[in-house]
Image 1 (cartoon, helix red, strand yellow):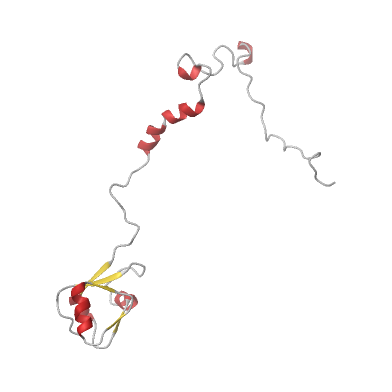
Image 2 (cartoon, one colour):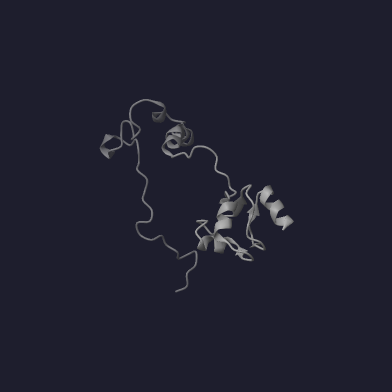
Length: 143
């Protein structure tokens, strides 16, 4: 038998009949009709939406807040010129993977920046995808 709009049925137990409120005490929901005694919620004409908004402060206070400002741009991993002088020799390639091998940086994903006012001793170093401070940039351009 093909399914069409005329023969589609709800599955059993998928919908319950609503409770009939205010139909006498014998029904179990008489007198106050499940609304309790007095107050704004017991009256007619009060929208549930407005009452829900009253509880917003409670919800906001429950959520843990991180203090301060967190930038979307990642912070640079800093490597000093002194560390490069100690760990690299002439004509070597300096990139994130070599810095990771020599344990000068801890993460591969974050950018690396070389800082320092000291002299760069090894000559002919090749830097790949690395940022520099102005003083280091001048030294590299001079060599």
